Image (tube, rainbow, N blue to C red):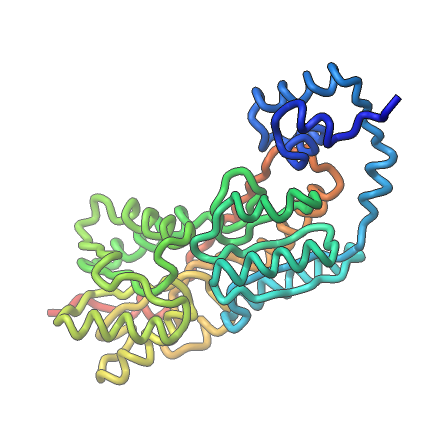
Length: 339
């Protein structure tokens, strides 16, 4: 009698082999109606799951993949170092790739890492990432993917900062200072992190009388060049806000430079605030007010979660948010309303 295979089950149930495999592992990503159809096909065909053979096929390579957008951003560099250290402590080797915030490049890198049989992938998603192409790659080999700092799907594990809370903390601080107008500069426009920071700022400014605009400048790149360009656009329109909020400390570096090119002093003529609190934030002149988002904690938490996922793929999608903390420094503290 011919042995019933998983391919036979998937054909009988009218699903892909990867979907049938996910049902076997108890994945919550599969709708219950589909899972019932697969289980019914298994029962009717007499399919028996050989867990020992499956475990043999799933020999670990003791390697993990990490794909980030740009290592030149000090925040991402800190995140990468934290993940590498945690992976090393757990006995894994880390392969690192850079998408440059390009979706197609990212998909190629995921495909390559899967071909190299990594046991799991940390992914800081490129803007515009979608679930279907990612799962289309990783489901073939059951490689788990964990989203870092940004997310594009609720169906994959995620570790990042509480960006909504970070925006609220910063907005409340600026409102307390007496700021009456603020604009946001920089960041990838459609990323989850930027959207949440904007929402947090808007929520925090509610009832304070602060005129906040996250669209006048439109989003620019998440680096110093983006900060410089954003400030130039704002000032060239004849605007002079009380405070310029940088999407990140990397963007704030360009904001400082552009203000000084125009004979405006950060912290005196214009308050400047930011997110991430990288090491150089307190070394700037004036020291930069920034919301710490703790990349080291995110990296360690992400490593623990991904390793748990490798050990038990049946867990429901996990979501972990790291609590941010506002660090007030002279770039806002020394600012006074114009008279």
